[in-house]
Length: 198
Image (cartoon, rainbow, N blue to C red; front, top):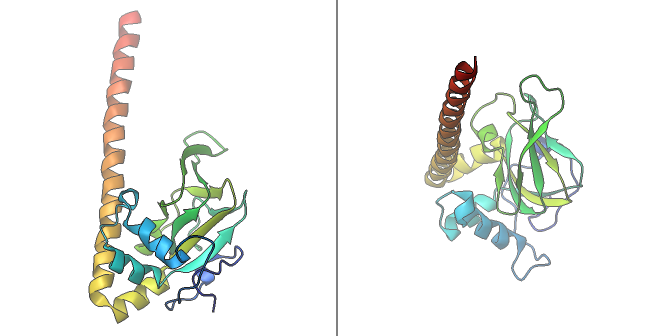
């Protein structure tokens, strides 16, 4: 089994081991397991975990490397959808196919410390966006199977992780709602302006 800290080349991320990995040294001042845990506790991750709790979660993750240009999450994919990614190094483009378009539009660019695809841990629905490595990336992957193992072995920690993931999804939902309100106001203002001109 690949230990955390010895990144493997990209493969289908749901084909991963689901048992905790052991720490190994990597070219940073701390092990990649410790580095991943620190990123998981950073404010940008919004996971509300202590460093000790984050290390436990990371022990159930496995490392992956993805080459630049590779799409590792595909919008609409209902098969390869049971994992979450913690980005350790590099940048990822998040893209959506919008209404009346056939080519994806870049929604945002994410860097180290970003969590990607966490909804895949909670449901089996299709992916809502595509994620493409814009540079070579290193990441830590938590599969749904590994999460189930964590819950079975450490129920309190599993429950806290599920609450943290749910809180992140709720925050994204609230942000989407705020954007929809702004969009509705903008559309109403534009309609009023058009009505005045006719």
